[in-house]
Image 1 (tube, rainbow over the protein chains, first blue to last red):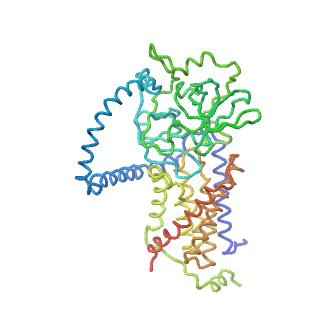
Image 2 (spheres, helix red, strand yellow):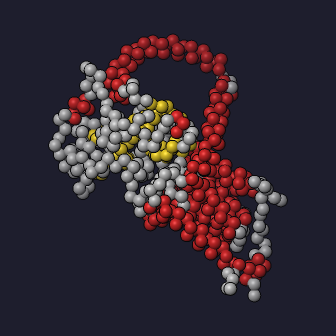
Length: 312
Length: 176
């Protein structure tokens, strides 16, 4: 039997190991299966450390804020008393403004009109370990009733959707991920088109025909077509428009600050949601929907979670 | 003639380092932990690729290609597992396997203890790692990716600077 020279052994080992991993990649791309055991084990093994690390950082932050940062406390205390008096005056003024803002706030309206929709607050304990994806881990999981494909939002707007649920943690695919998408429409003209991630901070709106009029600064909201998010939740604001063939190239800045998330809300239902307007309050968005232009052709699909070659 | 013997003789001035018990495992876990949850609080920390730096360091120090590539594979697969469902197992696994192999091979032929050498090698390996990841994404996963941008250049420089200091810290884990 012909032996392999010792100096070539590592090259053969390298080739074998790389080949095995390529096969592993191929299996993942072609198979339609649930989460793999290795992932479950690894996430299960690391999440307690991540949770502990997260608590550790918060504890350190609290310790710093409550002890070490109080050296100038007495001097600051006097200044704060003076500021407090002035702020009390401002609070009275702002309270009346807040009441007006409440009436106009679409998100608050959503929460008021969907008190029967269970929502769950969750804290982010980890983020993706590489730059190839945009995901975060929540400190709630299957034990709290979270299921795959549930929507995740913040008061500012849409965050993403649940892609994997473990016992105590949940993985959320952020809107900025390349494989992410959400059924969307323009806030004013009600032209529908899915919005997807690009792997960069800005999102892309791909299926708006060149003939349609779109303005920079226009709001983009959910259309409800993806059956995950209710209509009229804010997604973002258009920051850039370029002509293309046959569709415009539109970039959208997300409403939610996806790079600095700390707490989110999970929509605890897989049923399609409709935004109910309280009587006497008609949103300008819905009013415009009734007079949407006829050429606002809906896109082929909501594109939620769509991808070219996506690992399962 | 025994080639392996000749190579050892020729490069007998290159010292193979061993580490205290649990040093490699501990450093790997810390690197993955850092990569997973620190960017939640410090967004800019996402520039750093600690698993890659650990792969490079132990590859350069151990100077055994087989050990280097297996360590790179383990670190890469763990990073894949912690990177979410959209990252297939093997993306970082393959790239770090190759980096582990090359780092060990270079470490066995060159003196890589000088900070300048470590700085240059880290930039080279960072670029190569990025290239392999992009190749896999384009060829195997059919995903579009940018080959080069300023962000990558900045990330390479930042990682190289951090590597110089990180490697000095990790040197203390060596058995004297």
